[in-house]
Length: 397
Image 1 (cartoon, helix red, strand yellow):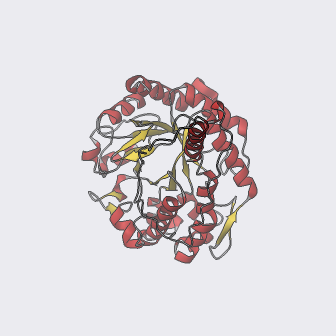
Image 2 (cartoon, rainbow, N blue to C red):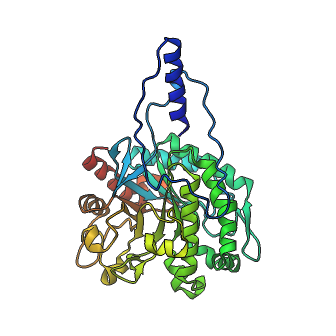
Image 3 (cartoon, rainbow, N blue to C red):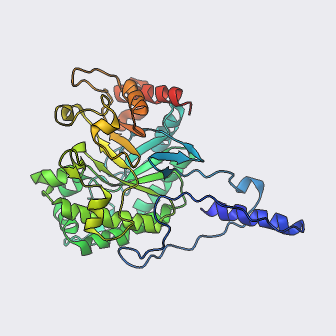
């Protein structure tokens, strides 16, 4: 990151002025993928050269690295494990960024999250694909509106100020059933069109925000399961969806220093070999795109009580019993603010968080809605608040 180079230059300058030679220092690298330099999956890797910070006053030089990284099956921050005590605040008025974005709303949301013990948040930065992204009738993506970028600049700055780590969700199954559905379906069925989306939106996103440590991760799509299963979403094959997953994963890994990537599966059904198959696995992604950077950094599956009869409940059994890959970190990326009321089990949300913490999960992100800034008067947020405070007590974070 930039501040590491700045710190090194500062220390070197001090040594030089004092007539000393800087001693050799062994630097510990945080590795989430191969260090071998590879060619971008969709064209030349043109990540910009990092700028050198010349202001070396004490106030301008960070003394810690704020980014979350993966070590084995754990999330790490500053050399210590971090548990993602999160929530979904997906939008205010739908398609906010490039639409009706209001900075004051998000400032209040992030401030309350921080006060109530949360450290992370999942936000849909594109809800339907009807605004912000420039996509033609053939499915070719040429970029995004300037307002979209300006709104995201503001959003991510506010998140960093309040020390809230953002999982940025790039698209949803809603893209495939809304006004421009035929365009998005055409994009997803053609690797050249997929490459246009990656080259002209995903990679510019990566380059623009690579230096913001509080963009913890990128969620490639909200609940692709419905794109595969539902007629209203086009019933697009996993092979086509996998072409997007694999190319996007490789591009993100090759165009950022440390952004993590995941897929927000609706259910464990498609995120585990225990059921219909794991369509986020290294094996599947690399079968669609032969690139060693085609992998997710962690698994993110959603859970609601209707799933319990079919696939079990992650708040009743361990992560291993639930069937999720244990070689990587795993989070429950969505769940009800009501906790669970299935399988003859009744648990409030705070107990669900505690169960997950004690039984092999690396984070939980409860679902809330756009009224959450009203505070305790809104049941959804009141429940999430209790969960945030409880897990903060347990972890001591």
